[in-house]
Image (cartoon, rainbow, N blue to C red; front, side, top):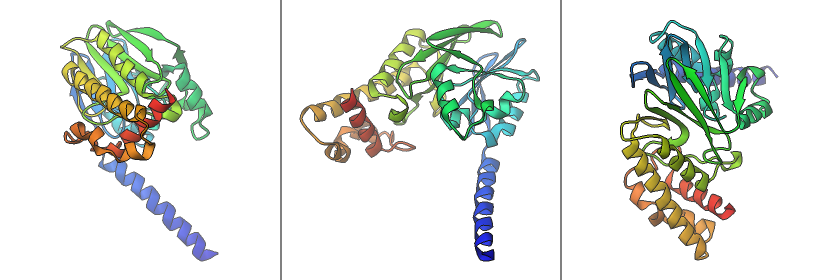
Length: 289
């Protein structure tokens, strides 16, 4: 029994140390986009920040263990309180710091479906929950500009929101855009290939050639790169749909490297979603649609 307890303690210690080490190694990188809008990169989804006379508006919160570093980075930009925290969707790498930030008196904003998914998650307390939710779109008048918050249906999830700073001309896409890599489409959370493509097209109506785009993952972007990403999505959709229409099985499509080769050669399969996995995601989604 004593040996078992020692083993359990050793496992717990190693796990805790690993988490601590990961957090210690992460550096929060701050990039200024306009006079009052910034992009923060750390571990997880990219964060957007607006600072000004009204206070601080924060977009997404990454992982909870990184909150102290993120707050330190924001304090370098403004000594005012974080008035609002907007979540682009419910995944933990975007909402993991919600509870920490909400305890500062910050009001969390998200789509109705984000509220429902966080509420249903037994591992997350009420401190993670948004207190302001919306169904289709809303405007936040903050720091001298209107910030358009709009829902895109069944894209990365069923609760995705994009935020467009109308005066600063900055768009935060959340995970409806993975710059230079294949995206994760969470089919179990209501995501779909066609919804994802439609989300990109909806955002393109709002932006112009000078818009600075904060993707959910990847480096700061622009309209030209965003259009390249759309081309990739439509290219894969056409290739996989053609194979489905010809009667190919899921296994055959996953194994067919030619379907994604053009973008594999550009290293789009570098990261969380490999070439094989994106072919599988497209197959499952298009079969359902």
